[in-house]
Length: 192
Image (cartoon, rainbow, N blue to C red; front, side, top):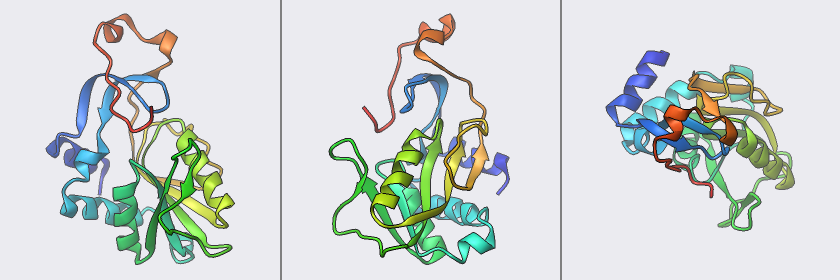
């Protein structure tokens, strides 16, 4: 899929939002991609996952044992990536603020894992999730995401293959432009 085709999927599902948003990273933006909306249609989610699977170099793709994603945002795309790759898909939760596998999920020692996210902005959640996989006995070979909002700056410590790169500006709390600050802020992400 081309970048325009992917954005058309977001537009068609009403997942490209405009306003004033506080992102999970704590930064502010005038745009938000609500991946849950783009993924709510199973056929669309499958198309996006299949396109994302094609971004992974064959040497990595053919070495994977499992797919892991962080809850909440990564669950649906993680499941669809598992289907596209023919692998089991698990998700991490953070009931105490730190990611863990729960619900009977477990990795074999040394399992080679693909980390799957919906959106990467700073990479903080991804790095936390990658660390958790290490604590659970696995090794993350690479990460994929539907969207890279980091403008190519997120350092995840593993190869990173986003479906699309979006360069919507983001701002620290004390840098929000006056026009954006005049709009009531919404926090649509899953992190408090």
